[in-house]
Image (cartoon, rainbow, N blue to C red):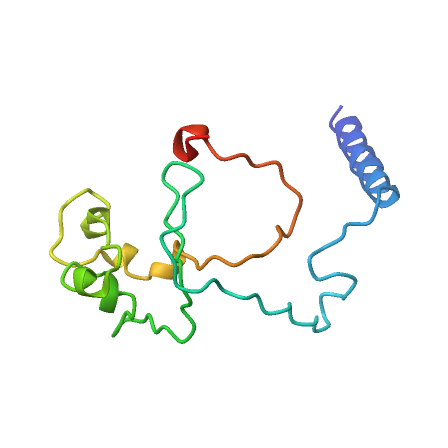
Length: 148
């Protein structure tokens, strides 16, 4: 009985691989370049100039960065974002202040300083560029957020 189950499993796996081979080849974002070869660098995108905050498309979306961040240093010793977005500097810089949620621990304890898990801004916040989507999708913003 066990030999029959093993034989059937091997047959199903073999048929599955055969079907995969007969299907269309998978096209990656690297193009036709093999994984062991260097691919050409993507064309540089033009970042928007400083502008008003960008509307969000869904609830809990981290705000997009409406300006260039090239050469911004964010490491254990410094965070360039805080020079404008900290609670002590945002008014003078005419910037959005960092959210109160960034001063909470995982357990929702209020901290005096930015939480270590929220310190590296570009883990969640990204600058906006006028780029086409890399893959086709049918995403639609939530109408309650956009008001449309």
